[in-house]
Length: 419
Image (tube, rainbow, N blue to C red; front, side, top):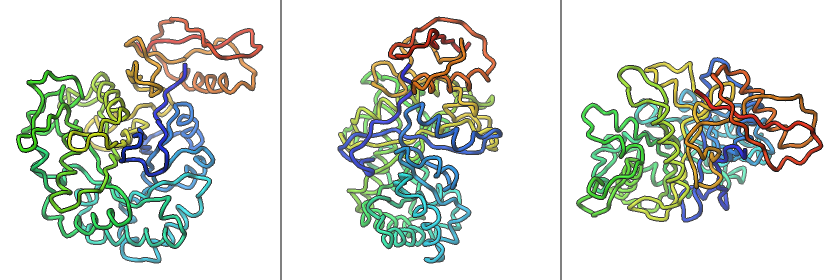
């Protein structure tokens, strides 16, 4: 079992949104009762081949654990630190010194995400948002890190109004005094618009008429595709329509060459009675299709061939988050490292691709104590230890793990299916 590999490495740290290959990353939230240690988190990332992560802070222990792994990291200024940084160049410089300079180059920090959905979740801080970006950028320039590390701020897609057809989209004009200087900043620094894209929430809107298949990237017959009557562009999924709406909204303000990085996208695997479509099957379908779609480098109807790299929300289920049941169930993994589901990605290359049977299989039973220096065996043994902590009904199809060359008389080879 090769494990899950979510990365197609770009040629540079900044190929998120160009004609170079797209990548898939993962967000790491920490509102988890038994949050794994940074070392355990990084072990999971390495086992799964995850090479791009976004943190919601700049936790020193996590950044140290990520050192010398090559994993590309977005660090974040939490919303509660935004006012201080946006009001003081010195505070911004100290933040960069402590949370960036102290860790590079050992830790491969590629971007700073300033706040999270500030315009919609913390509007009182909006007046200092662009100042915060500029102060942080100045600190990076002073440290000669501005070419390696970009500065931007993640937006909710709900700042875009009249989003279909995409060609009619525009940003909420209330935020023009922020968006225009912000887009000027992104353009002048070669950065990207960070956008959180959630077809699940678009689908769940009370007055929405979005078919579930359209939200989940499922194939649609030509007569069911959405057509932008102004451009005659055909849309086969909500994700592309939202991304193109953002491109058109930027064009409305005369910005036509700022790329987009999708900093969050996903689908919950469980919901309450008012969320019947938050299911494991739909979460699996959405994320599997999202990964395929991003990594085929097809771009969007408006920007064909321009990659839209995307960070899946999220690595772990966060049981401490408040709100509806779905808020606790966006993760790909439980806190003990067991997968919530295994993504179905047959014929999609080495991307989360260990499922070729439409069943969910993972190595899960230790059949012998192993003493070896073989790294493949050690990785498997580590995964086995974590999965043994999960109580599951077990069926036992056996798979011999080829490619483990050792003198062991017994090789780990038992897999089980989650019932």
